[in-house]
Image (tube, rainbow, N blue to C red; front, side, top):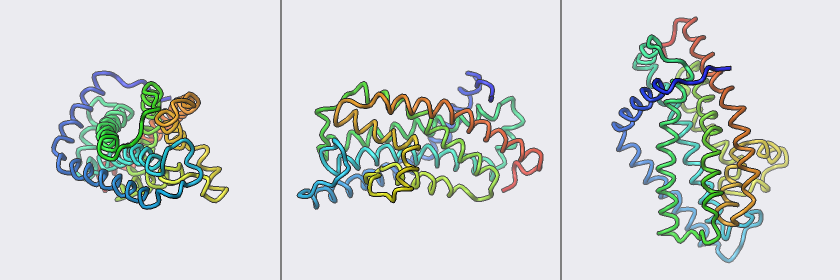
Length: 269
């Protein structure tokens, strides 16, 4: 079991990551614009086929409402996973990862510090997406349960961080593999019903989706925002998933770093 992270080490790593993220402001601005455009595209698709209500969208009042929640949560998933993978790859390419490992910093602290900042930035961007969808595209939230939505948002953090750290462990070992993060995030989003109901998937894929924490994140958030209830079970499942997956992913990240040390290739990519 990985040791609990030390507060001062997490603070130092997080501060360092925020300073680095501040130099990427044009990149984050561009991803914000692209995300807004993506939401508008699904809004126009929903308007085009407004006369037909798709089956399997549950209590979502429209296809746009169904897809908007999936897109917003998927944006957190993508930036949370891809952000850590890219940062790990950058640290290796610049040689700063090797320098970091000479400092009194544990592997778990490094992983949580980097992943935590990526997820925090992703949540800020997702909040802007939601505000845009509500104010500009009239996403209906009259039946929303703010407490339920907030609890889903909190409960999803450990699972999303665990997935990102797990992918980071793979990126450490495989040269030039940061693209795995994007593919993994997209695959999880599609299998979890981000923009279409999982009932349209082949039966074996639908069974896989039922064990993914991302499925319960999407399902629970839709229930909280459009129905006002039925979000309690998804919260518990997400918390349980995070409690299992986060220690495993931290152990995998630490194992990857130890393997690089043994091979003497921690700074070679």
